[in-house]
Length: 303
Image (cartoon, rainbow, N blue to C red; front, side, top):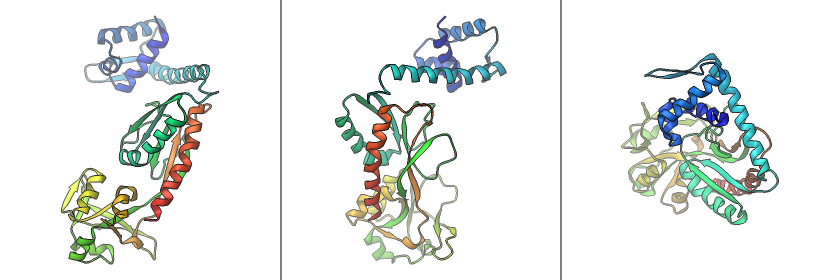
């Protein structure tokens, strides 16, 4: 029995929630996965996983075993990376994640320049609007926009991001430019789909208190770039993250409105795990990307 393989299979089974899910992820027959787990349990002399037709649960022994197995496999991973030279030279695969549009507009140009400068590093860039788990997904570095929860992760702040309200000059000419957020009640608006009660948040410039203004959207869509495109086509006023509409603002297809009532900007951070020594591939990329992103975000504030 290959104990490390069996250990990895148990961890993947827990992660996927079933033996079937682990078998699919490993491209391995289900009976083989089940047998390897059973062999490990027989070797240990205890049951790790309680199986049923409806769900999979860990026994008390299984909970302790999974926690220890994670530490062991992480240490093995560190040892292997050290042996391969990741800690002495910038090489290997670097896994990054960023929000989809931000990653396309801001991270991808930096990554391609980085690849040219470091030919021994390959990059996997995961673009997703979901906050992927760095440890579970084995991600080296993440871009996060917004306040960060307390965690063991290390964050490097590279700038800030505002949520802005913008509209086509033609739309404002037809309906009048709003002087305060309540004026939006009489102007067509575009919102992100999914909000139970559509409302936009603002901050009073005097008291600094936040307040909400209910809106009745003429159009609801599920992507920021679609909201911006609809605003350019004069469908309504849009409220998006600043980088979503930056190009439209540069070309004057859209203009910012209600700037005095904008919420406080949120941080933009580069996040990485604090576990162990940082491989050089991660360190050199962090140094490479931080200054570039800071510059990009400063230019964004000029719009």
